[in-house]
Length: 182
Image (tube, rainbow, N blue to C red):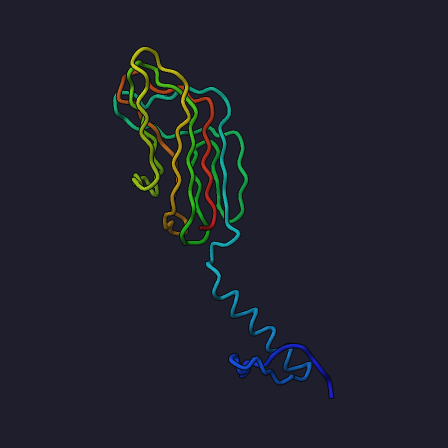
């Protein structure tokens, strides 16, 4: 008779008494438990994407018109398709993702208000957005960011855009957005 340390599924949880299984049954139970665990994990576990822009860039986005942040220099991804030029990324699996956007930059005008938004298929997501008002005496560089959890359909176009309420756009020194399983 073989011995093992795995409890049966019919174990009495209150008394902590377990009967022993033969090796073949123990392996089948172990595989079933692993399969059950895998089925309980969200499909998005292990999916991520990060895109970064680290060169100084001035973008339009002045006079209240949104402009997408484009021409990212680097990316790291697993389970997403990315386009560094357009700044668009798409998840291969639908699900809830933790998303963060960050911008270090300054407005082209004094007393400007800068807004940044995350978009899904071109639709602004208010849950992940920021608004920053710049000093009335001189626009200084500021860090702006937002983080949230959103549902993203598989194949959807995800992007990051900004706008200024003044005419002269925005100078960006650094921009990143990162997406990972929630």
